[in-house]
Amino acid sequence: MKVGRVQTFLVNAAASKNNLYVKVETDDGLHGWGECYTSTDRDRVIEWHVQEMARYLVGRSPFNIKHFCNVMFQDFANQHGGMDFYSAISGVEQALWDIVGKAAGQPVYNLLGGASAVRHNAFCLTRFPNVSIKVPGLGEFCRRAQPVRPGFPFARPIPPLLAMAYQAFGPGRMMWGSDYPPVSAREGYGNALRLTMEQFADKSEDEREQIFGRTALNVFQLRI
View 1 (cartoon, rainbow, N blue to C red):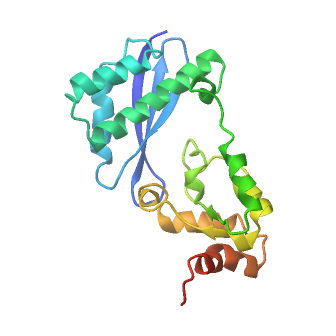
View 2 (spheres, rainbow, N blue to C red):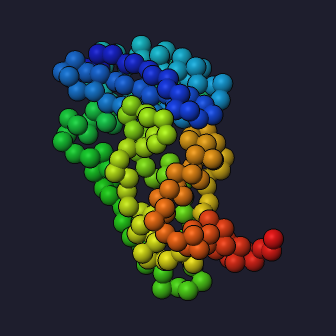
């Protein structure tokens, strides 16, 4: 199996920046997708990096991921990796792992050491009454939809982590908190807040006020 083509796709999902996706195709029909981190006005430079690195990938095995990444760092980047380089190669590497997982008939996490039970362990902390849990934006744990759709850019169904957290902790021990500044270069803070609030649309107004404000005020003993 050899890499036959590498394509890039810049997509505007009504956010503050473009998303950059990489599609790697092989000569036996398998293909893989990856996503490069981008920031405003840097997306085309990162896309150029992907396209230039693609010349060294076409015709080679998609399984030799570590070798390819090492060669790109040593020779292409001349051992001076920066944001544009690392953003570009991360998307290519994701696409290659996607191909390897499909070829092996395994989810990629099985090829990288297996699944983790950290999420379930976090919910065990409910036995400590002074522990609250952060409510993240969907972009921190949901996969991007492909193709990206305006309004709701994530693949459905989304993982039930917010519902699990609500059941375990209750609204009085949940508090909203984004991963700023990365969220600004992903779906945007406003979208992150809106989409997360929509997941609690069936809760009472009092419960939503606790999750998106009052719990944090109590935990940090803030006065407004």
